Image 1 (cartoon, rainbow, N blue to C red):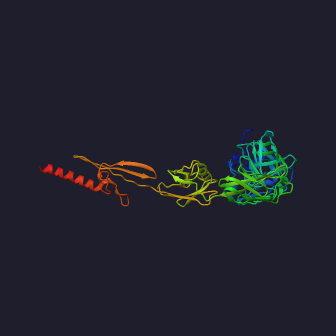
Image 2: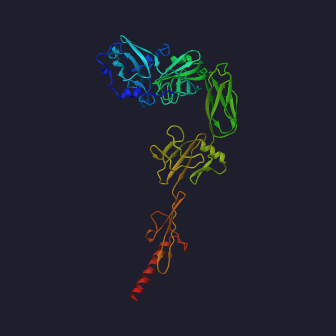
Image 3: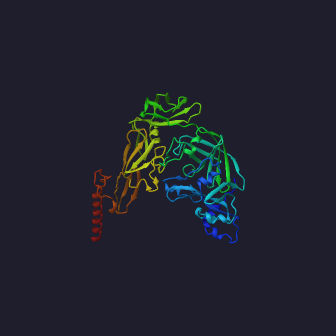
Length: 500
């Protein structure tokens, strides 16, 4: 892998190196190097042989489209300040005589020739941009890729291995075995970690609701992706991914109805499938299925997925989720854990814990999975009383908690309370010479602490606390009077000796 240069970063820091910095006697035909904003259409035109004009890409998520600093999600791009990424800021070679005309493209001079650049020329106001000039030579890498037809970001997603890690990506091109080239844009098509995606017209909105431009990619359906070209500041890196067929997608649907857990069956329907789609239906070992129904034996509550694939591989696979439910609550709270309830097995309890979707603690609800989730209950049912979110601790330390646990496949949540249990035991021991007291034990949520007091002033009967039992008499409330009598007796003895 070639060393990644940092020309764009240097250009951003050295904004003083503009056209004004050029020698006054520079010939108009002299070559000058700099960076400039290049619209997607011009950047990709020569790369894909003018197959189509690449549009700008819009997104309503400012936290993403504005992340164009080096190392960020859409590094190297420029935008209109209103949610649309217009193209990339990339090194170029231009004639000195054209520099003034390129001010509207935010041209900034560089003090050295870059490793990779595009030749830019002007004919009137018409901009002409060449293919990439890669002074180090194109790099060819044997990599790999997986194809997914089930993605929130379009109809196809390629997860590429072997891409130039650690480099900002200024362009990505998918090359097919049939000779087609598909140019991709940031955010809508180019993600991070070698992930790229696009729509062919079946899925027209991505997961956040943004419209997907699919017209230029529609012809990719049914083709075979052979390589992916990544454009960085070091030039081309062409990753050979083998033959990755892009199966044909269509607007079909698979639907499985929710049902009761245990032993039973539920309906399964298919709509919009081609006649030559030869179905293979899979779910799990305890399930059997045909094109009309799913049957099952001793199935636990929870969410399941039915997957349908085409024997020939010509068409894309489909899947649908369904839930099997139960009214049972197979857990109970005990000593800081969720354990099996009476009449249920460890397997029943483990299934409930595995399917926990959310917990509500004193009116605050926390998701157990997905973005922003917090792990409150461990796999063995142990409750993490030290659990924290970015907003603070889940448990406030008071010991008073009302908890509701919701699990997928269980029709009702499991509700329980945790409260501090305060038990105070005071022991009075007297001798003829002194009074000794008190041992107090306070138990809170099955945790004990003890304290010894040197005087009887702290023998602890606060308002509302439990009454104290006398260990000598067994009479409730007798300990305090006994202490008073002992003190009085001791005082009388001292006074008598003094009078004597």
